[in-house]
Image (cartoon, rainbow, N blue to C red):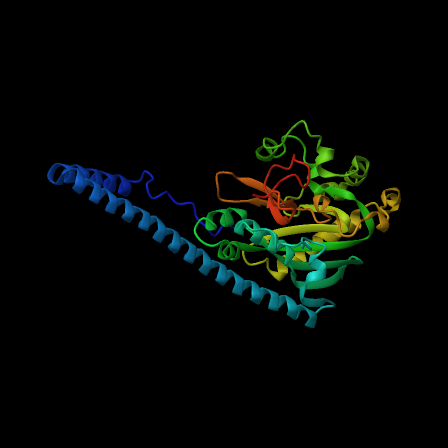
Length: 359
């Protein structure tokens, strides 16, 4: 998932570094003994300059390596989108290469970034303002309209590392990945609900430990606890809500699932997720949902940024000590600039939606 690799610092404790440190110390002692303080200061200055240059050169090599990996992933994504476009030849589907209109419902923010002067904040704001849906594929499953598309998103860990090595514009490009979104359009808007609401305490100990037990689960994962209770009383919906491979949310009239990757997921995986998600939509107790129906007029346009209509979760198990993580994708304020970033926030799901400022 991450393109950057956490390496031992240049002065970190390794066998090679310990040998180099011992030799350096011997050089300093010998210089001081034979050339005095003047010679010592000259040698120490040269040694410090060499150390600084070594760190700089190492950073440049790492940045170049990540940039090459990003370029390869971008080409792989372009090929994937081309294959997705060819689906229209064999199935009853529609295809559009790019859509800013669709992106406006799923992460794009119409905002003025001219006043943001800090480069790392400006690129985050510009990314959200210029976001576009790519490879937009429309189809119908189980009678429901389904849309699959990709959004350029920022890998936060990569960006935080790369922005220290180079300009923010290059760092954000090299840190870009893809969020493949599958969205099922429902007959009418419903209260917000996350499938995470089905998680029992202790079911996933690694995640439960990171949550604030004082925040009731129903307030973390839904706008209407009665609505959540009704949906989770349906066995098929409850089983789907425990499926860690398909974390989903109901946001307005959209049932949404998302998956992040460096190249975008294959069309076979995308179609499988679309099929699974429409099965969830078909299993909803539609004969009992009318009392929970939200009037379209009650859904403001544009949707308030702190209550984004697009809030999707993604479960990810990496090969790191941190283990399982869940990312929640939504808008978050960038400091006090008045602008917003489109961010994937990690495991602390106990916080209210929209509570995480971006530095």
